[in-house]
Image 1 (cartoon, rainbow, N blue to C red):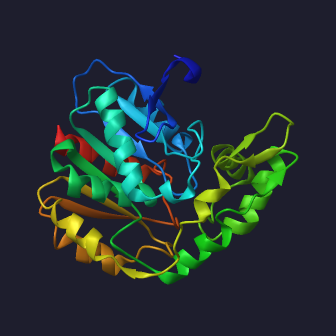
Image 2 (image 1 turned 90 degrees about the vertical axis):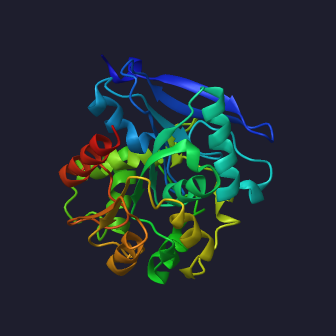
Length: 287
């Protein structure tokens, strides 16, 4: 089955009237579905390899958060916040008649996953927290703040790939130019005039806070995940999520596991063999 025909584009409406989008890879397996939540500036394409990898053995839904990908941009930038994302996701689950799911959350998506577990524990069957925790390192936050909302654009995909390589080589030191171009195609899109532009609303930067330190609300949310099968992935080279915080999280999770992905910074792509092995083990535990 071709990639173009292996999923359905689904849309639903948020409580403030935005048309939101996700990719839905169907399955008749009856297994608990997976819902993927991307990072701050990312979109559903980050997870597309999982759709092919599951081969229809499990339903998997990949979200475009509001202001990203094929979801509408918000009129009010203050709605670009985790509480609103939780509401949007619950509405998507209700629209699709999904009672419970396993959540894969990368970076911001992991924060949203923790809040989902806090506010709707009955909806969370399991969780993958990808390079994220209740406390974040200031160095990584400063790096993100420096780049988010900067409207870069390029003439060709090769130019976009080379730019990503120059600015992110410490995150993926082993990437080839071909891999950087493929990565760029997940982050950028070609607009109607043929320019290659970032695939998100630049206004998501307005409510973003680069203040470091711990979040009491997120540590509290983690308490609600005590009995939920949870996989914590950490990039070995991450400047945002430390090994120390990962170990501290494990103390609160009876069904938690921490796996470090070698030679990767923030955040693992989930295409690494170690990531895929850990994901398969998580899903096996949940099933």
